[in-house]
Length: 127
Image (cartoon, rainbow, N blue to C red):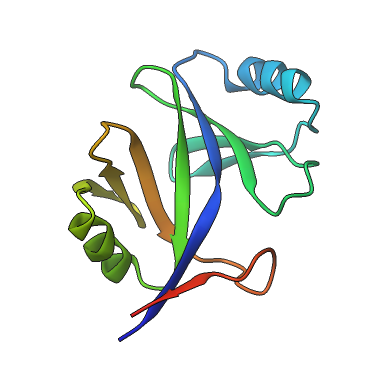
């Protein structure tokens, strides 16, 4: 069965005591707005809207070392994880509602549920 996926955005993981300070810095550094703080079951995010590219750019408070990771959104999490495993990626963990993956290059990324397929570029259809 086919599924769809596309780049969803970039998440700036910050190992920090204060997510608001990190969000203020990245907002100013990137020339983006400082959005609302969202507590998603203990995971703190601050949206940085204003770029117009239909990509999510967020600051996230994390316990691991700071880094930037990307999200791939899909209408079928497991089918997309299977597809990416065939390309050499590996599943690290299923957290809350998404897969944390690792590319053959060592980069971590997430596969998340597609929210608005009608917005932005058309998702790629995979068989």
